Length: 341
Image (cartoon, rainbow, N blue to C red):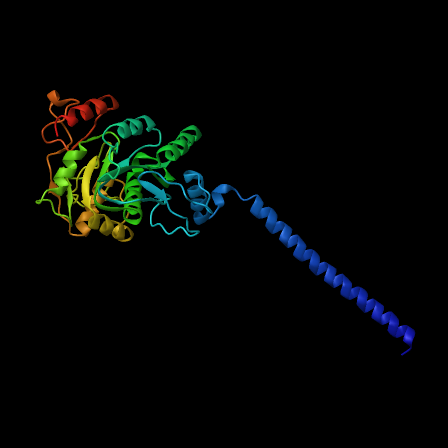
């Protein structure tokens, strides 16, 4: 074979090889470009849950994940792990700075900033440099951007909001107490937990006296207004279908406006979340948790669902927690309670 023919064959082979390499590089480049465009155009709703929750933590707490040092008198914001390990919808990682005899978690709707303000000025106000008790508000998300911005400013100012990633709704109260219980056992050191709503009055000195009494158990303790084996409503506001609950009676429970749990009970409840299906009536759900853990209820008349007409805006001799107290009554009851300790 002549040298000229060999050279011609080598040139052809080189051209073919170059074309193949260029074609493969083009495929790789196009694939990378398509992948990049797809990610950039992905809607926020399609982000994976872990990424969305982590982003929400940074946004809600207004903190730098590389330099988290925000502090308040009662709470500090812990450094954030890149992994979200919560069992519930909890996103707050702020911790208590000391042990408390009483931790009060107050269930509140996002738009109830006026109620929270009044509560902070009255029975939830910490007057001691090292108080025996503290309080936080449990608040979920809102689709109202103005309210959401108010919440961010409120939390930055007071550092007393415990936030969840779900949107607030009346039938999401069970999710709210679950995330509140989880925050309590993971981020706070306390002896007793008082769960209340933001439309109640709490006589804090009396609650502390009740809990410190020698007759009050320090463990396996669940106290409130004891509802004994109530019948499920099959109609009306609190209607529950047989598909949701097919038993003829609920387990004993305390109405959700206010009840006390010892620390070990709260921890047991959190450990039981994974084995007890969701139930939208939050106070009944707590009763289910208690039943599953073999915890009995201590009745206390101081948890007042109703009150005599002559005691409107006035504590009775037994008042520990009063249900359905409007904003106009909070200050009056608080001022009276100072003289009725």
